[in-house]
Amino acid sequence: MAKATKQFSLEHISQSRGLLMGLATLWVVLSHSHNVDFAQSHILSAIHLTAFFQNLQAYGSAGVDLFLLLSGYGLWYSYSKNPGIKAFYARRFSRILPALFIVTILYYGWQGTDGLGDYMAKNLHYALYHPTYSKGEFWYFSLIIVLYLAYPLLHRIIRRWGLLGAIGLSLVSIGGTFLFRQINFAYFDKMDVALTRLPIFFFGIWIGKKSKEGTGIPVWIPVACCFVFPALLMLLPHIPLPGFFMLRYLFAPLVLSLAFAVCWLDSWIPSNLLKRFIVLVGVYSMEIYLTYETLNLHMGGVFKASDSIGITYALACFVLSLLLAFALKKSSEIIVNGLKK
Image (tube, rainbow, N blue to C red):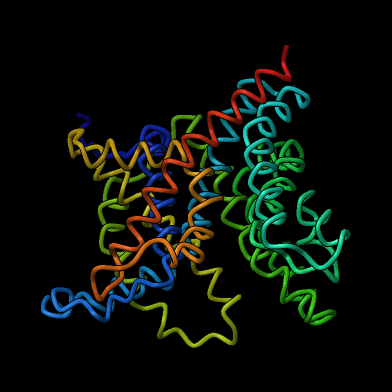
């Protein structure tokens, strides 16, 4: 068990990556648990934690930002180790595309779309960028595909310019987002869910760079983050901003504080059953992300909540999602291995 020193190594993010992926997954799952109502919990009310859990659920989409932070961080290590573009693309896309195509082909075959063009756009994951088609339920993967394609260039920029590169890319993306909002608001209204997530990805790459260089930060920073995260979470509903899209930019400090806090706590808390379960969830993060919300929205005729909060229904959907995630990951591995022969 690692002990804290005067410097807290950024490599702790790598060491706790599985735990962070699992927490990000569970956070997104909570936000997609549309039936859960913490206001019905007498226990939370008695200990004055109702508002905290309601905010945790309301801003659970910040779990996506945590995914992007960890993705940028991990890509720095992966690309630095093997900088060949062809091999990089092969590794990245063989991980996500088989499972993604399996789910989207089945989902849109079941739910239907607005014609063949819309069907193709959603299954080939360019609907997010098309001016007339809706972005679809799997917009995150449309974003991550583009980020993977752009990564070799982003890597070169941040390798050369470091923090200035990450800040410059973020300022360009933020400025472009606001300009885009003025030019075509309807198109922007569809795209903002992705555009506002770009800065946290850029900073994830830079943090990965500093981590690989062996950089540390004062240990008081992750300790302070244990208090900063809940404070920010409680402050978010009270920050006067003209539109939820601007609030998403504040998800960056929220997830950074969570990541540092979790890494510091993980360095002190020994391995236990709960941590191992969360890490297991992180292993199947993509597959759970792909399946859970659909189950939560459509299993009402199969599962029934046995409690007023709705936890039992959400738990049943999560267990089924986890089982489907195992099968989906195994199917994807079979497809990839078959294509390699």
